[in-house]
Image 1 (spheres, rainbow, N blue to C red):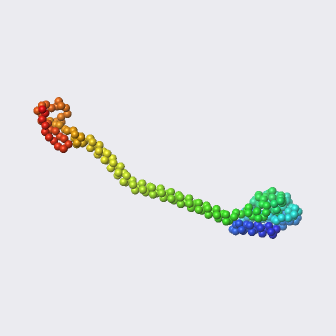
Image 2 (image 1 turned 60 degrees about the vertical axis):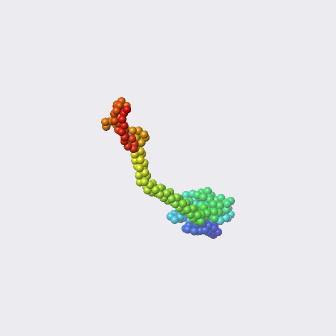
Image 3 (image 1 turned 90 degrees about the horizontal axis):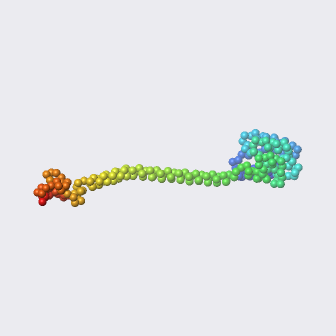
Length: 226
């Protein structure tokens, strides 16, 4: 009826203005109503742009609502390839088409709420999703930037570190060479004693009266064996 149609249209356009509504005007009361509703239902189901059907009328007496319990209409609702929401009468009314439909709503307004989302809520969810994606993208970019900065720093420091490691190895090798050199031994208080241009390694190698050449860290001097 007119009131039910008005409620459905107002609710759908208020919740989701972009929705396209196809209205199938038909009898909803009297002996011809069941056949009329079946034809209207089949016509809507055949339309490719129709995603859901709201079968609705306002309240009435038990006799007024009898067409919605007609077996032929109930079977047509059950066989409909498009989802059907039944919103017939009031909460206490239970025509058989309610049980054959994909969903039942207590009022035409409730049926309209079932078939379309709230555009305002959708936009809010989209905005939250967009903000979350933006935060995620910024976080990814920041992590990548930090990795690039660290890699750049490592590359920049790599030559200096390599030179420093080689310098340390050279200094260590030089220190070992210095420690093993005769000069370092002489600086620790030792001396090289020669006689007849031969290094004296044992006391038995010299005899009384032999001339000795003694080399120390800061020079040389002569000596005689007594």
